[in-house]
Each structure stands twice: as structure tokens, then as C-alpha cells.
Image 1 (spheres, rainbow, N blue to C red):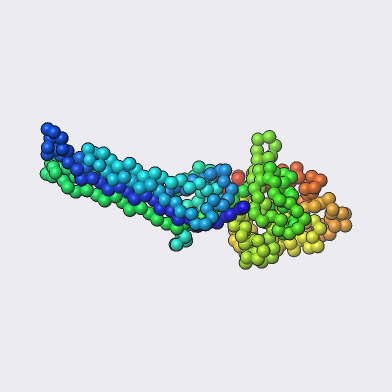
Image 2: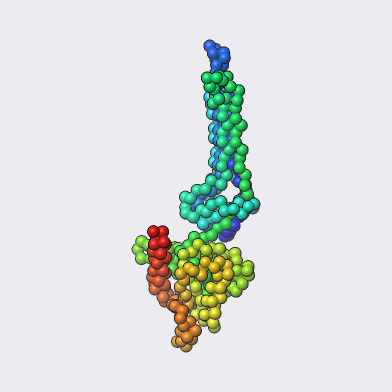
Length: 335
């Protein structure tokens, strides 16, 4: 099951308190202060895990509590620090304070770490307060308090290319043909009920990631159909592939509807580089292609057939070129 949002409860550990103690040995009945410090409380850390694809593990509002720091002891023995808790999430997870809606952090890459609840500091023991004027201090410090939060996790898939189209446009079939993904495929609407990621190999040593987004319908940005649940996954893609069934009666109208849905959800999506692709070219006869040429005048497009493999090599070439242009533009902006 694919789950892309969840709520969790986290609590760091309390810090241990310092100790008040004095050295008492056979030949030193009135020794100096030797109270140790308390240990710090454990942190709650969120870590990006490349092997995770969903937030399924966090269904039901799970609680995570780090270890408490131990109190200091005599003979200058410091308390042990509390054990950290590490919560693993898939790359692309955004972390919000559920009560204030503040964005705390964004796990973008595997290995990214964010401390979401810092453990309480350890309190000082009385040995820390000894001085030339105060040789028998009875001062000590209470351990720091833990931090507690309710967090909202929201997963936005990270892919190079986002494939958008109406139900039954052939998105899943395309992904299965040019990548390592094996999505469910059937000839009825809404076969895809979750986004699918696939790695597309390009030549010998290069690759890019493609995401098949569940079919959009008109009004998706307002929550109709399945679109609203998955539109967020298009936000992080670097380019878009609009897949339109070559048998559609009004292909240009379908493209404009899809583009409008994306713009209404987030106006920045219309600024992404895009490629328009007509699928199922194996059933597009000459008459149909002439109609496409007239109706799609001024709009760059290409044909593919995932069934017979027509145009798939050219498609990968054009997508790679588009991504290279995006990379070069980003590099020139940074400079």
C-alpha cells in the first residue's frame, strides 16, 4: 500500500540531573565535592532511507520517545546519555509541525538527517561549582526538559520526469516498457491507484527517474477523482511528459485541460519544460494523423506505441536532452 502522508508523535529524552556528593574515604572524612553531571537526553532524528518508498510504516499515529539521561552520581561519575531515536523515511519527505503548520525540514536525499526533537541537557553536579571561596558547594542543576511535538509527514516523490495524462492514456504501460518499474496494467480507468517510480536506463552508464502519476480528470485540483491526492508528486519533477491517447477526439483540448489542472494546483508547474506525446500510435491511421497535424498546429509533439515499441528510443533521447537543458540552466543560475 502506498501512503504519502502521516502524523507521528515525538518526544526527546529529559536530561539527567546533577548530583550533590562529597568525597568520603577512610583518610579523607571531609573531602571535596565529587557530584557528577547528569547525562543528556536522547534526540529524535529523522533520516532519509533509500529503501523506503512510502509512509506506510507510520499509519495510526505512532509515538517515538528517545531515552532519558541518567542522573549524575558520586565519585565524579557522570550519568549516561539517553539513547537517540532514529526514524527512517523515504527521500522526498517534508516534515511539518502539525500544530503550527511550520515546515521543520525536508529530507531530499538518502542520508539526510534532521533533529526534530533535541534532548534535554544534562544538569551540572556540585563538583562543577567548587571554587576557592566555595569549597563545599551544595549547588546542583536540574536536567533540561524534553521536547515534544506532533509532526505531519508529507511525501512528495522525487523524480526527473513526471508523466501526466487522463485515465487509460497508457502511462503505466509506457513506464513498464522503458524502465524497471512493473506497475499494474489493465484496460479500465484508474488502474493506477498510487504513483509508480521507474529508473530509465540511457545508454551504458546514465539513467533518469520517471514517475507515473495516477490519471487526472477535469477538476482534479479541487479534489475530484484521484488527482488531488497525487498532484503533490508532480511538484518536485524537473520536467513533464503529457501523454495523450492518439485516439482521443480532441487531443489539444485534453492537453489544455491537463495543463490547466496543473496550473490551478500550482502555477509554477506550467513553467516546467514539457513534452507532448501521443500514445498508441499503432492504431493511429493516416487520416487520424492528418487530423492531429491540423488540430495540434503550433504544438510540438511526437508519436509512440508502447505495444510495438515505436518511438520509445527517440522518446528517451528527447527526454534526456530536455533534462540536460534543465541541468545546464540550473548551473548557470547558480553561477
